[in-house]
Structure formats: C-alpha cells, structure tokens
Length: 551
Image (cartoon, rainbow, N blue to C red; front, side):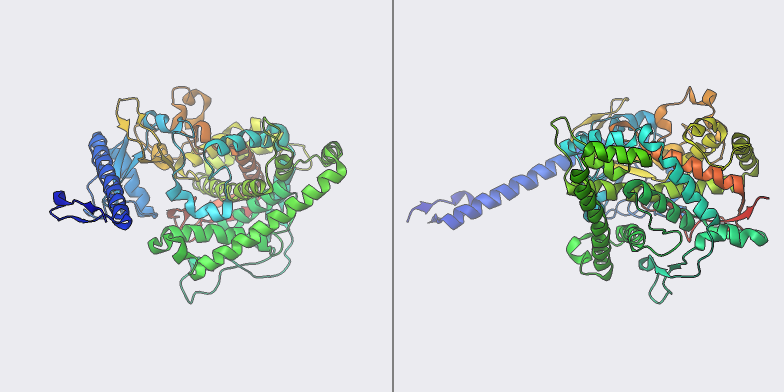
C-alpha cells in the first residue's frame, strides 16, 4: 500500500487509504469555509463601522431585547430614531449585524433596488411559508417578477370598481345586521394562558354597533369587529363566496384568524423557530390543521372554476361575469397568461389567493381601527369628516359610497393618511441585500447584511416630520406635500416590491370610515391603547372605543 507523508503535521508516514484522503479533503473544505466566513465577518464589521450603534445590552445577546414589541419598545424606538435620524446598526446575538434605516435619503437605495438586489429576508417571513406558499409576499427572483406582471391587472380600477358594492354591503352588515343569537366560535385561544376561558365570538355580534348603542353608547373592540368585516369583504372579492361570517360561524374565517395569531406567537418562542420542534408542539399541530383547512377551501374553489371554465368557454364565462358586474380575484388569476402564453398553476393561484386573504384583512383592519381612534381623540376632525360625507351623500338613496366619490373626500383622505403615518399597519420591512449597496452619502451596505426599513421609524423621525407624535391631518394638504420626499410616507412600502393592493385597501378604508362616521359618533375609551407591533400594528388587549348612533 502506498505511503502518505504527513511530516508537515508532525506525523510519520501513514497508509494513504481513500477514507483518509476523503477526511483530509472534507477537513480542508470545512477549514476553507470557516476562514472565508471569518474573513467576510470581520470585513463586514470594518465596513459597518461608519454606521452608528446604540450601546449593547450584552456582549453575547447584543441588542436583542432593546426594542420589544410593546408600548415601551415603541417609545425606545422613537428615542433611537431621534438620536440616530439616518438609521443605526444593531446586533442580533454576537455575529449577526442588522441595519435599521429610518430616513428617506438612506432607505431610497434599498427600497428602490431591484427585487434581485434587495429580496425579502427569509428569516422574518419563513413562518408564513407553509400557509402562503410562493405568493407575491414570499416569492423572489424570476418567479416573483412573472407573478407581479400577471397579477397587476387584478388591481386595475376597472376590476376594483364593482368591489365598492361589496364594501358598502359588508360595513352595513357590521352596523345594522339583526341579532341572531349566540353561537360560539373558538378562536385564538393559543394566545391565552393555560386555564383562561377560550375566546369566543357570537354570531351576529356585529349587531352591537346598532343594538347595544340604541340606549346610549356601546364600548367595542375595533380590531375584533373590523377584522371580521374585512375578511367578509375579502372572501366575496377573492372567491365570490359569502360565508355570512359576520352573522354565523365560519370555519374558514376562524382558521385564518388562528393562523395569524399562531404565526405572531411563534416569533416570540425562540426554541420553536426550529420546524421539527414546532410541529411537535400543540400549536404546531394546530397550525398544520388550520393550514389544511384553508388550503382545502381554496383548492375546492379553484377546481370548481377550472371545471366551469372549459364547459362555458372563456368568452361565455366573461359575458356571464359581465352581467354580474364582478370579476373576482380567482377569475383574474385563472385567465392570466404571461408573455409566453403560460397560465398560473393551481398551486400558484392558491398561494396568491391565500396571500391576498392574509395581507388584506389584518392590515386594513389595523389602519381602520387606528384612524377611528384618532378621530375619537380629535372630535373636531371627526366632525369635519362627517360633514364632508353628509354633503357628498345629500339627497342620495341608498347612502352608499361609489368609486367616483373616493376622489371627492379630501379631508377624510388626509385623516386616513395621517393615521397611517402615526400607526403604519406594517411597522417594518425586512430586506437582505445580495450585493453591496451604496447610500447617497457614500457609505456602503455590505452584501449579505439584513436591512430593516423602519416604516414606523421613518414616520416618527423628527428630522423628517416636525412634531412627529402629533396627529395633524393637514400634513397631507396638497400644498404641504410638495416639498416632502415621497419616501417620507411609506405605509404601503415603495419601489418595485410595493404593496400591489394599496388601491384596494385605501378604497375599502374610505368606504368603511365614511359610512361609519355617517351613522355613528366615535368616542375615546377611558383606557389609552398600548401599541403592540406583531405582524401588524395592534393594541394590547384590543383597541376599545365607544360608539353612539347619530339620529
């Protein structure tokens, strides 16, 4: 057997077996990877020295725990933004640097970069993957680009116009639907301590807006009520399916609410970040079960439409839809084709429909809940909005908001935007740059670094917004917008990966707000809400307000 000299390691000649050679090659490869990683780490540390950082809480944990998802954490973040108005560096543990960007001049380089240069960071979104698949929120590269082009027509104003009737109907159900009696829907008890009674909803509980307020005012949790209303609207717009979820229990709606709650909870359980541990836990099993229910519902709708389409033919299908005046989201996806004439697969359609249901309900509910809170705190602005709506609908029956009305509610729109500034539904956007990115002042963000585009921080930055904590709708007066960077206000993100459904969301928010103020006066509760950023900006224990009907 041939001999291999290892004298350079201080060893004598040894037999050169294939296993020994394989071991040496493997060890050499591992050593090379460790050295390469070490070089990259120290090189990034050197290049990131130009970005300021607050004092670490610990040499090992870094800045973990500095900004918690609580009201106190939001105040800490506001102080950090005031101290570091361009942005700052923080460490997640001893080896992972994160750049938080909170100024329009700095975020421009990242947010306007191509989807390939600054894709979404998988760490912050991976928990949604089993539910949402490769929809627009989670996909990347060529697949994202292809789907974005194919989905854009689904949000053209000609498609959105017929949805106005759905928005009007859903909010009216929330306001005045007759009480049907209690029927419990178990939801979200995953968020409650052991031994706490399961959280339930009552069928027809939305009737409390009119019924409970009939003898004065009613105290309501805006998030609870509006989330169900937005899900009702979305199910009709996406699937043309009316589950009557505001009137009676719906397993599908309950599953979506449960999935959102479980994903939020998992973010705070470090050990359960590992998939194999999570799916052995009770919450992991519930997550799988809810995913299966949601996917089965979407798949059944897609199969039925696929079956109907060939028998009718595309032209007959479109003529039938034209009579009903509504082309829903599934219809648009089924009829979409790319430049090569290829259609979306059933799996792709399911991912996009599930993504729209997820992204469309919580964000809109958050935006609406907080704008009602601000108008309750500022009755003078509330009354001006109400007068604007009353003047618009004077002499009109039924009292419904139409598409063209959206452009003639300027003050109400200003109030919505100012609330979205103070309480952006999505407080932070995560990106991981795949190549060096140069910011306008010459500093370089190294390849591989996670960038957190702090929407909340940008909106609360005193270098961008004077008196940032003050609710002042006149910031969005057309005259005041001219001198401001378009990236100073980014509730729907910006750049190539901005929110494709922002026109849908703004239309729904305006309709719901206008009709709510037309029929109710909104008053502040005795307890001040405490902000709680999760997947969206929530309030601890709900956002409670009082409503009283107008004569």
